[in-house]
Length: 143
Length: 143
DNA sequence: GCCACTTACTTCGAGGTTCGAAGAAAATAA
DNA sequence: TTATTTTCTTCGAACCTCGAAGTAAGTGGC
Image 1: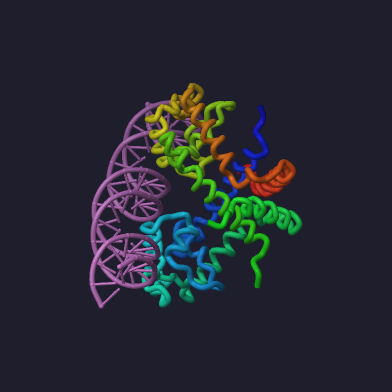
Image 2: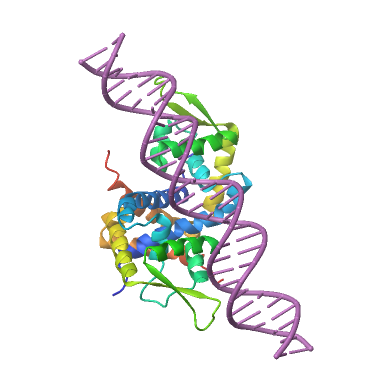
């Protein structure tokens, strides 16, 4: 029996992720980042309101203690700053510094350049984005 | 400026991988596996000749010491067996045990069932497989 | 206002994972 | 035979992740 289309897709998605992670390692190291810290940095969109720790942990699929550890490292590097949310003083919001914005942009650009997806032409990319979005949409159930 | 199709695709690829990893955690734990050991188990196809440690490390994008550690765990669980390659006695080949084959199948089935891709219909899946394969093919350069 | 409860986060300590360096064993080549 | 290369393992350090416990702040009942 030959491998199903579903299995092939899952394996290919995994493989593309692993290849991308592997290739950006050098770039991350140049900025003093690891995969965990780079992922967190990426997840903070400077165009949006700074997320709380809780929100960020959910985006990264990690728990609160782990996120505290990661954000401490980013703070130490001067890439993010914590502050207390004035509307709920239990919450800490995490905002990019100017350095953080710069490094985040550099990491994203390097990742896009090294991704296997960079080889696809515009039509294929749009097609792909549609399919990946469809897969994610169906399972995103609002809470 | 809005996000490019390339960036959207890369983010979606990452997100699908994270969601899948997150969802199979319970199943892996039931079999005494972690992500690292499950990935290694998956990478050993019982239909092919057992890979050497070197070959397996390359598939997993990890280095030799790390793979030794992971294979030790799988060996402890009784899922794989090491033996010396008779054609090159420096090499150790890693083969699935009967238990290993059974658990590998269970892990793959659970993963496929929980993957966001499971929501796509056959046409979309075939289309997706074509696009992912295209992205991988162009960058696979033979060493 | 006071008290119990819940929520958001941090610290701590343990365990899991990854990796570079060094070393053992076997193949290769001169 | 001897030097070199290849494959793998062990060791030790650093990093990552998580459960448990603790702190601070919001919420609701009275």
